[in-house]
Image 1: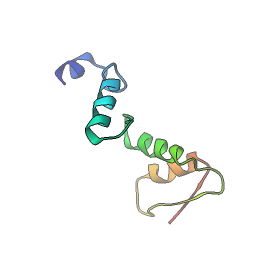
Image 2: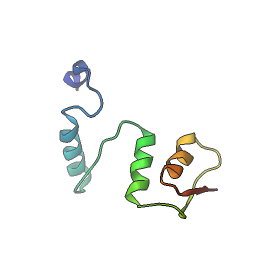
Image 3: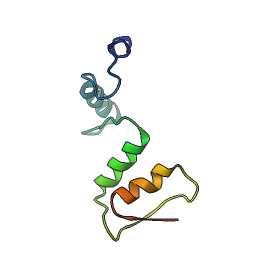
Image 4: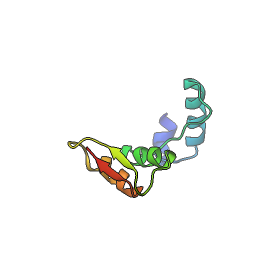
Length: 80
């Protein structure tokens, strides 16, 4: 951990692939993907669902803007 912090590369650095592999093994799945923040995590999740125009996604009316924006990024419609 110390070497990662001292490297100055805290996101998507050379240790990321190793972390993804070890994390996937730890939780018992084939793949794991590390992302830099919650907005990207939401965006990747919605892309994996293959949402698109005409799809409606239920979200909270009281939330951080990323919840709605990530739905709009897919050209889907946020609903509450």
